[in-house]
Amino acid sequence: MKIDILTLFPKMFEGFLSESIIKRAIKNEKVKINIIDFRKYSKLSNNQVDDTPYGGGAGMVLRCEPIFECIDAIKTKDSYIILLTPDGKKYNQKFANDFKLKKHLIFICGHYEGFDERIRTLADIEISIGDYILTGGELPAMVIADSIIRLIDGVINNESIMEESFNNNLLDYPTYTKPKIYRNMIVPDVLLSGDHKKIAEWRKEEQIKKTNIKRPDIME
Image 1: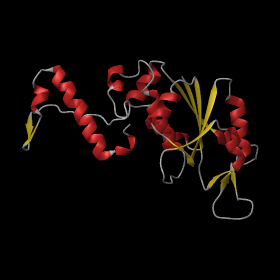
Image 2: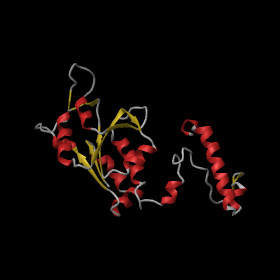
Image 3: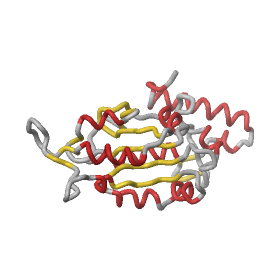
Image 4: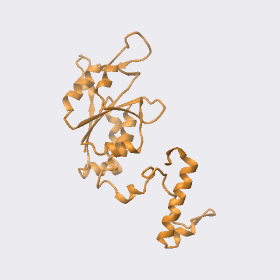
């Protein structure tokens, strides 16, 4: 998979690309990630990418030309363009599973007060990671890219993915490790029994119980 991320602040991605699972996925050539400073595509002498809004109003608005020019330069027949915006569709695990099947993802990170409305015409989909406002689309791009990359075959253990929250409309079951007793909190006996059938039954019951309490909205 190839991922291109359009941003005005490429240094924000340095830690994201150089640590843990994402770093290994890049090293093992499971994914190729390009961080593109679309300021370089500005046609103005000072590389300006924003301007005051027509009709007046607070803040500065991203101009459309740099982003259009950048997309023209990198888009292919396999490209799928995601515009990160607070008024997009709310992101969830289903989107992650769908996006992992794409060969080339392009993320457009907004910034400042907003972006020229014409930029929306470039997008195949508009995505939000929640009902709140951030300073830009860089953090959502990292969140979404992380959730997709970890699903690519060979990036992490497939068994771990199958047992995660949301895969069966249930949250994950509780997990424990050593020590058996800590500050009067005890690991459930069933997990120490060695009876895999009983353990599986207990885990399913706990998933249902946990989801019913914490996230009844996702249960079938």
